[in-house]
Image (cartoon, rainbow, N blue to C red; front, side, top):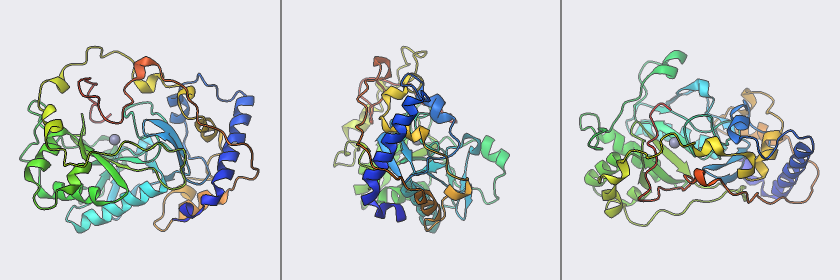
Length: 360
Ligand SMILES: [Zn+2]
């Protein structure tokens, strides 16, 4: 990938972002109190700069985003009107690779859900994470033989794979091909975690024979009953990207999984109307660089930043180079409001959170 071979430009990028931040602040264009989701949700195109993630999966943003093409030989983008098919070039390349490999494994093709907004950041609806271009949702419904129309991509329902009462996989729907798809995704070194419904994790724990080492990456979580969530690690060239905790070494099929089949995780939310983290998050809560990411100029066109296998879009994104070095800026240490404490990368056992609804 062209962008990854440019570590020597990093200080200049940081410097350029610092300048942009100062300019933006001086002009009063972005204030620290503004709601981050309003600003990031309004962006239609990525910031032109080498690919770089800032902050954490649930509190950050990124530059150098590229779009997954709406269609490929073995994938289709779902819910296109949301404009969430943007990611770090490494993520988009990996989605395309998974689509190819999965087809070779006998899965007809991938239906791709949300990746990120063009510049990441918190979203108007759904997801706490997906903010730094390194998360992607992939449906557990295989791609139909006939190409889907735009309208079908907006409205077609996904298949719920898990019984809502028992939290077990629906036996009539689960196939060995589902297992192979998850195993393939987990096989990539870049992939650090795959989130699935506890019922799906249990199904794998109960049925996978032979090599079980990949089960370590398969993590149970609320929701994720019609799609799985693939998360890759911080990429080279992103010194401001905050890594998540490593997963434990074992297959995760023991005690931690058993907890999901108790009553505790499914208790009704005591305070369902409490605002969600994304509703409270202001620019002050994000890394400081995110102000510059917002202020940076748009990519010249959608075509220029649509990923082409081989990195054409990445080359276009890298062409515009920052010019003047300046002082480095440090990430903001802003503290989140107490009500926004749902930012943990993994659930805090014993603290139920609202179950994310499908189709959100
Ligand atoms: Zn997700």
